[in-house]
Length: 111
Image 1 (cartoon, rainbow, N blue to C red):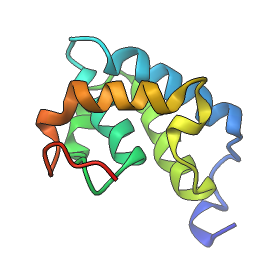
Image 2: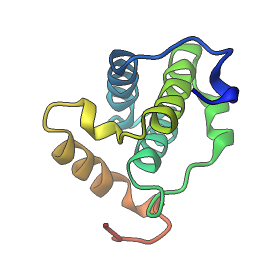
Image 3: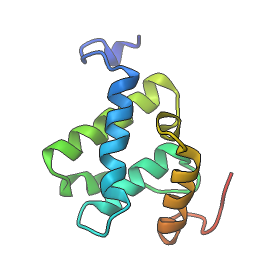
Image 4: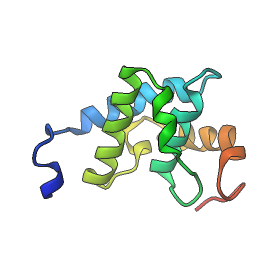
């Protein structure tokens, strides 16, 4: 464990899966927090294709903000992409990608 994380509570793959699920439920909708949730998930999935503006976290309620922080931590600490924690995650993230590609750095880019 790195020095930066030794003071933080330990996170499990279940925490990561729950956080991804919470954010995805909002990301696929058309509501105030949808863009922030989608961009965070898609950035964790493919940072080369999707920007994430950290100030978008300010618009999330406490529950979604906490889920966002879990995804950020787990992506770094576990080195695993968020789609790995969902049944049919590859397809779900491809659909989310198509829904939000207008916000991507490289429109239509896939890798």
